[in-house]
Structures are given as C-alpha cells and as structure tokens.
Image (tube, rainbow, N blue to C red; front, side, top):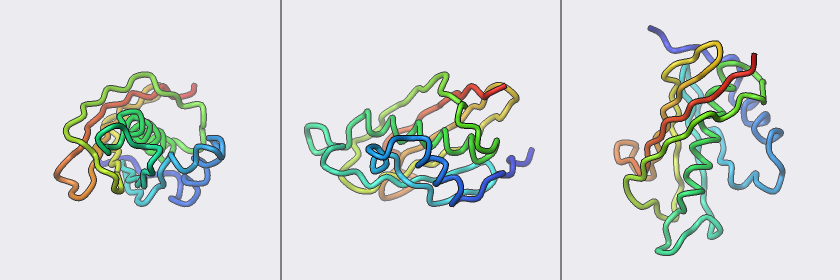
Length: 142
C-alpha cells in the first residue's frame, strides 16, 4: 500500500508548528528538514539547557522532539488541524545522545479516521545508529 501524500508544504508545516506553541519554546521544538509521503524528518540543535548530568541530551528533550515530530507528520497528512492530540507515547532509549544535532524520522504506520500510529526514530551521526525509538498514537479531531 502506498504511503499517504502530504497535504501541506514543508514551509507551511513549520509555520503551523511555530504558531501552535509559545514563542518561548520555539528553540526546543526542532525544525522540519524533510517531508515526503508518509514521513517527516526534524532536526533539533540542543543547547546546554537540554543536557542532563553526563553531558547527554535529557530524556524529556528527546521525548519532546518525538512528540513534535509525530504531531508534524500527522498534520502534514491531515492538514492544519491543531487539535490532533497525543493519546499514547512509548519510548525506548537505546544509547546516550551527545550535545550534537538530533534528528527525528517520523513515519506514519497507520492513518485512520480517528487514530494515527507513528514510528519515530531518533539518531545523531548515522541514521542506522539510533539513540531512541518511539511509538506514538495520535487521536484525530472528528
């Protein structure tokens, strides 16, 4: 089965994300760097505020990026409906993420009428060496 085609352009999607969240958190959202059928790639450049002891990117920072990437891929494929909401998010931390860009590859596994299931993979230097993997479920507006 073919991946669903995005209904939004990449720039419009990024502007929608910036409009959905307060200005104070824009630096922690990441930015959309690629949009193709069924997938979105985001990049986060973590700063010192994102670190935990050991100079690693904190779990909450990684979870935030997962959630924003899942939201982005859903909105890219259903359009500007900001009331799509996280219903479930499960994450597995696989290795420490250093103070370097973190990429999130979000892929729609299923886009239904009421729910969307998304796989999100976080990586840094090599897309084949994951720092975390997550599954998110989004409830879609009626």
